[in-house]
Length: 131
Image (cartoon, helix red, strand yellow):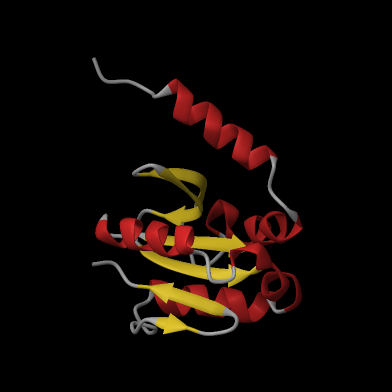
C-alpha cells in the first residue's frame, strides 16, 4: 500500500525548522504564490535529496548555500541527480539572497519563464538545467 513516507516527512520537517536567515527571507517572498503566481514548497524530497525550495509547475529547484559549499563535489553530484530527474537547479549564495533579494527574485522569474535557459556558473549563481 502506498502512503506517506514518515521518515522523509520527518526529515523535511526538521530541515524546515533549521533554516537560516537567507532561507527565511527568501521563503517570505516565495510562499503563497507571491512570486508571479508560482507555487513553491520547502524541503521537497527529490530522489535521495531535499530541495530547499521547489516549484513543481516549472520543475525548478532553488537552493540557498553558504560558503561551505564552494567547490562541493557533493553539490555537483546532487545537481546532476536532480537534473537527471527533470529538475532545473538554481543555487544562490546566502549573502546574495540577503543583500540582493530583488536580483535573486528576478533571476528566479527569468528561469521559470524560460528566459534564462543556458547553464550558468558564476560567483553568485549556479544554474544547472534539467536533462
